[in-house]
Length: 176
Image (cartoon, rainbow, N blue to C red):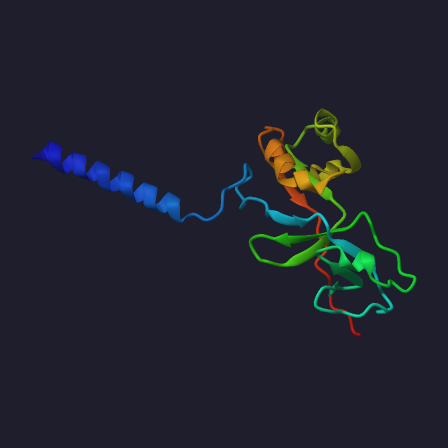
């Protein structure tokens, strides 16, 4: 009888653990915080800086702060009235929140205390933009955002890397 009760307790405990695990919506990073955000990259998007608000907003052209953007590249084909496209910027969408943002493709890498972050960039052939050793961070420039998730996944497997996050501009309040 005791053996039956003991076995049923084990099954209840295992089922409870399984159910609790299934309810967790985020994975946890090595530093104990929720996993970094994931983004949908609009590779054919186009972005232009328009601080004087000369470009009109339409169904295909949106606005983020001083920037105008199109997800399908139609901004590049429109009359820009002397405004140049910012070719290094791309539009991204946060998959969790649905917020649209603009990025230059800079990835911030937080690494384990006591290491040289430059070695991480060198090991993966990443273009080092800035190094902040006092806070264990480095900034690398990604040449191609279509590989963003793959690069983040590869870095997450490296024991020296704690987190990665894409630098994204979400706009700010602008009186127009």
